[in-house]
Image 1 (tube, helix red, strand yellow):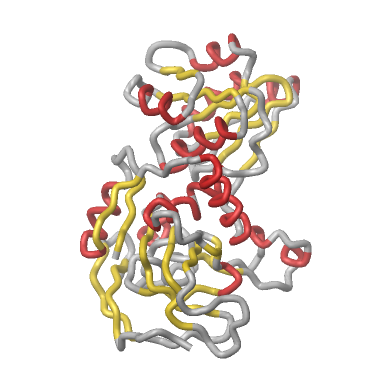
Image 2: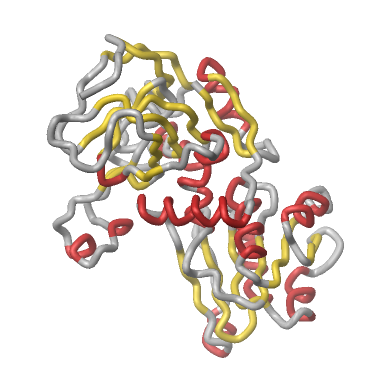
Length: 335
């Protein structure tokens, strides 16, 4: 079953390692059992989109259409589809599907599936007019939320909206990134004392507007000492891939504190003594399932959390990709 569908559609893809995005024309393919085709309304640009560009995972092949913060409308389904219907608004994030059979899937932990699929990395993503998604990786997206604002919630949002936020004092390693600006709002909405950490004063105004109770400028004072004066951080959420900055924050944790790593980074050097004596924990958190994404969106709507975005038309996909590293907003492609 489908709406009126094209014979071909436009997408932007990496066609070689470390090459630029290039316009390609994709032949329409009907969805197979377990798949749905979605007409893309918005696709966020994420640091994870560097993975297909640089072939940072061995299974990346070319051409590859990137994009894993996808919101759109179901355009076609196979006769076997039982969950989704043509015309529904849906979305999908980094989690592109799971095998249903491995030990992790059998306990319902689909995010750690050993055969997990990845939108925009293992399979084509949302820098396109249409995208084919696996049915089990699709989340329902309400009609009353802007697609461009909803798209980043499917990766940046669901990553920071995690069960790990269980602190009385909350540290943030970046205040303006896609992860950081949402993490500040989530922590504040959950009732925690929220502290934004940055390397300059440039982000103080926006951090406080987003809900930070405190702002610690690393160019003016020792951030770890400042955290300890506040009682020490129970959780420091690291949203920037800066190993030196992350390592320097560890003394800012209080006893039984957790260093929560959300951004891919080079290896860290950890101080073993303090880790043992203060019973510190280092934990990673990758992304969320479709169900996690739906919970994240509900929370955002209830608490009035705002995704700060800058939109680009599909033909400016390269400009949007380039803007990701420098923009104070989340770049979002709107086909």
